Each structure stands twice: as C-alpha cells, then as structure tokens.
Length: 563
Image (tube, rainbow, N blue to C red):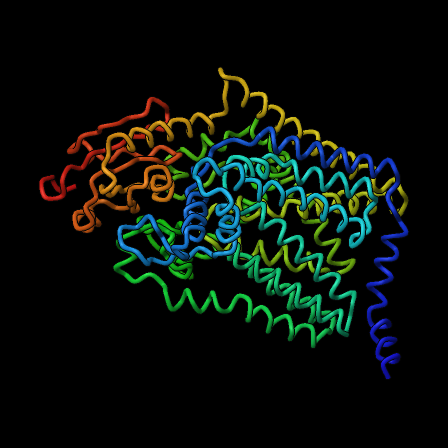
C-alpha cells in the first residue's frame, strides 16, 4: 500500500518533475552564466552607487519608517507621532514589520537608513534572479533574452530610485508578486496530491503577504484562486482560499474592529487614518477637500487612468531616460492642475510601447492562460479604478510589461513573416538590449550628478533643505509643542515633536487649539500654495530653495487670531 501511494504521488507530480528536469538539462552556456554574473554585479553596483540618505519625502515611506520604529520599540502598530496614543494606521502591516526587524538591529534613526534601504536593494537583486529563471523555465524564452528582460527590469531607473532614494514598498512587493506567480505555476504543474497542496499553501501565504504589503495584492489572491479552478484543482483551490482567509483574515477583521473613530480621524487627519472605502469615492484618494464622486463618474476615472497607463506610465518605467528628456515629471507634478488631481501630459512613444505590450499579452492569452495572464490584468483593473496616480501601481509589474512587449514584437514578426524560425527573437532581443542600455545610461547619468557638487540631483537638494529645517526646529521648538504639517511622520522622526496633518486649517482650527498646535510646518516636496491667512502669523523659518519649506509660528492657542 505504501509503495502504491508513493507511485501515485510520483505520477501526479510527473509534469512538475518533467519541467524541472527539462530546466536542469538545458543548463545555460558558459557565456550566459558569465553574462548573468556580470549583470548581477553590474546591477548591484548601480544600486550601491545610487544609495543616499534621503527618506520620507514621499510621506508614505516616512509612515513606513515611523511604523517600523513603533513596532521595533515595543509600542505596537500605532501612530506614535499623534498627540493621543492608540490610533491605528490603516496601512497594511507587512512592510513596516519587515523594516522593524532591521530597525531592531540598528535602532538609531536616521543613521540606520542605509540598513533599512538594503531590504529593497536585496529584493531587487532577487527579482532579477527569479525573473530570469521564470522566463527560461516557465515561459520557454531563450536564455539570452530572459537575461536581457530581467536586467532591463532591475535597472529601470524608477525602481532603482524607489530602492535607493525612498523607503517605499514597491521593490519588496515586486518580489512577492513574482514569487507568487512562480509558486502558483509550480502548484499547477504538480497537480493533485501532497506536493500540489503544499504549493497551494505556499502560494496562499505569498499572496496573503502581498495583500498585507499593499492592498492591491488582492489581485494575486483572486488570480491564484481562479488559476487553480481553471486547472480543475478543486482541492488545491479550497486549500488556497482557506489558507488566505487564515493568513490575511485576522488583519482584515482587526482593522474593522479598530478603525479610527471620527474623533481620532479628526485629530490626526490625512489618508493614514482614512478607510479605503472612503478614499475610493474621493476624487483623489486621501484628499477630502477635492470632493467626492458617484458611480456615474467612474467610467471617466477609468478612461483617464487607462490613458495615463498606456500614454505615460509604460514609457516612463520602460525607457525612463528618454521619457525624462521629453517630460519633466517633477516639474509637471508641481503644476497647480496636477496638484489638484490633474494628470501629466502623455507621450507618443509610451502609446507605441503599450500597443506592442497589449498585443503580446493577447498573444500569450491565446497561447496559454498562465497565472501571470490573470494577475497582471487584475492588478491593472484595480489600478484604473483607484483615484490616484497609476505610476506606482504599474511599476512593480515592469518585468511583465517588458516581457509582453517582447512577445508583441515576436507576434508581429510572425504575422508578417508567417514563419517560425530563430530570427523571430532577433528584433525582440534588439529592443530589450536597447531598453537595458538606455536604463543603464540613465542610472550612470544620475550617479555622475550625485557626486557632482555643482549639479546634484534636485531630489538630494530638496532633502538637504528639509534636514536644515528639521535642525532649526530641534534647536528652537519645545518638544511639547505640537506641529501641524503635510508630512507628520517625517517631521516626527527628525524632531520628536508630536505631529498631525495640516489639512484644512479653517475646519480644524478648534481641534488645533485643543491639541495645542504651535507650529505649522510646510514640508511638502511639491510647493504648497501659500494661504493668505498665513500672513496673520509669524514665519520664523524659510528655506532658500524653490520648494519653499517654511515654519510658521501660530502663537499660543489662547492668544492668537482665527485662521
């Protein structure tokens, strides 16, 4: 009986073993092995050379650092910057928890910034290695083409920037997204039996971690379940669903039971305490003063986001240096219409890249619907529904964006030539090498500017001004003074003063008086439009740079004018 069980399990997992054997037998040539090592070393060198001390200018990454500190110092998962204790953030906890493990190793902020950023750097190196194996083994690409796609994705300047100049979660999420797809492919190949169940559990764990890292990871949960149903692996699908409920369910229930009360939301302000259901119906997620929308407005939102993805984001993440030669994203983001929820201008090259990527996606769907062909469209479907800039949601998908672009080039070639020969990969390989070369050039240009004292990147100059302002606050403000600012976590991390959001001073003036808010700190990367009411108060600090960082002394709560 035991022998029969062993033989049955071996037969059920035969397709997986056959695939693994095929992969092992087709070992890469010595040239590919050397090229892979050089690509990995080169990518790591780019990341190390681009590392800097900047953190928190995106606000979201400052929240991640603050929550990591809260967990690492034993205060739990709460907003330790808030005047009142016990306010729960509505950010998913996985990434802050991961950072907190490293925060414990070196609990001195901001001295530990490089250690915290190493999490994203290591994640991107892993993305390169896993993507290469995935494209060779699961998508049957030639090794040199798989290597080119992986390298081009890893050295994409926006991802390098996210890993080295912020503390955002995109790089870690990109790794989890890719790993989930790889594991689910292995699960389907394993079929029924113990091995398939084990891989379904592993896939559920990864999909749950993705969801607990970024809420858009729900796309992986849905895709994984549908993929197992499509493969008629009913038992594995049930195990997957139950496991996801067990892994991610407690957090979902906990947040519903501990959602910030109206009083807590009024005290802290900002999107950190705003439920996603509320944000969905806002014109711009997290910004209440922009107003709300109805179901009738959703088609317009979807259409606008689709145009932004195809006409801007794809080009911006695939060939960033070329995009930035034609568009200045930072300057566009400073425009009043963009700050009010508008969009940057489109780029014809991005539409061109998107057309081929869409062709490639359709070609892959017609050939065989894999986990990726479910997960990527589902992620994009959620993205086009959400009232926020689409760029950061599309960025972790870059290995698949480039892959589908390559498949689109190949599909067009086969359509025109009507022959299936080795030359089908020539044009695709040429484009991938061009993308990789362009992205390497963009990184090298940034690195050269970073070490040029006369022409340092604007991002670094802005942070220098922010640090100078924080130093002034530390020297002149009392630790008991509460500060209102557009970046509460960063101001708290650098000054230790309690902070709240500076949204809508008129509406929140009584609340500010109650909390003892003394200073208004304008610390947004993008210049905040001066409010005429600021003239009633004394501006005690003003930065010299274009971002116009400033500190406004509102005076004692019991002896100051109304805003």
